[in-house]
Length: 375
Image: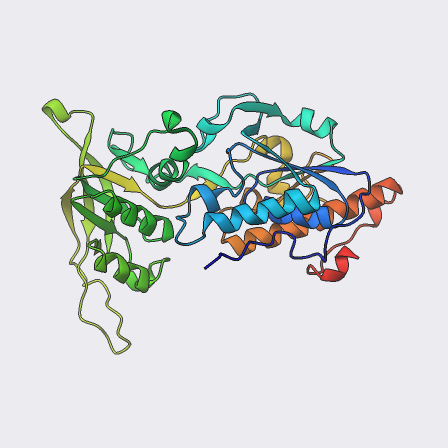
């Protein structure tokens, strides 16, 4: 059965006649691709820049193909390029010439300065997503054998592009602890089982009924051979001794016990049941989410944008530079990132139109996206 292509230009009815304006979109994730499709439908010439070798962002390089088939994304991107004239510049990281250390930076082949990008375009859209993993904030987190969820998943998806630059984590035959209970944690646990891990245990500080991934995903993991420990909070990574010095050998946690179900079927922690436990491990994966780390955050004045202190919706402190998706709101679901990209793209297009007439101060935007906006 052929997968249905993703339509990143779904807000429009087809390509429009070119209007002579050039727009750069930084980031080829869901927000950036939706913005590119919207702007192309309005006749703008769109250039998309991304540090990775293929468009799609975390939809391709973080989320397993069982959730979002990569061919659907590739076909949608192909339509943007072939039918709408969107140009993709892959392997290009827009940076401030400081050392790059976000996940995925190892696949970029060129660094380009934002000012250079602005000089060649009428406007710029920043949609860089969330690529900096959250930290547990406990002693021993930097020991060998501890990694983030993205550091575990990314090499699996990216190895086909340049395996020599990837540091893949092999869980084969290992005892793996996965901290977290979101979809990323579930994906890590299944990935470790797929590599032949001897044991995979999911650790969550609340109950499975409160898990962001939902109880069904946890039940599926258990059916596949994984385990789930509830009401477990890591407090320290345990370091080995002797020839294992400098390497993690387990987690010290505070674990509480669940009581019997109440009348609503909920199981809560038994008072005074919490105790410190030590859980052995060969590999510890902290899959507790990512945060955005947009370049030039202070220069762009993103806090002012979040407070709506800027006159133009989603425009930064730099004139003509707009921001959307996780870079603005923090980590979100794909649908919210897409909507943010559409709103910013509409704001950008209206700004360009009124700027040409020296009427920028007339702008006002508090309405939802409509198909009429493209006419």
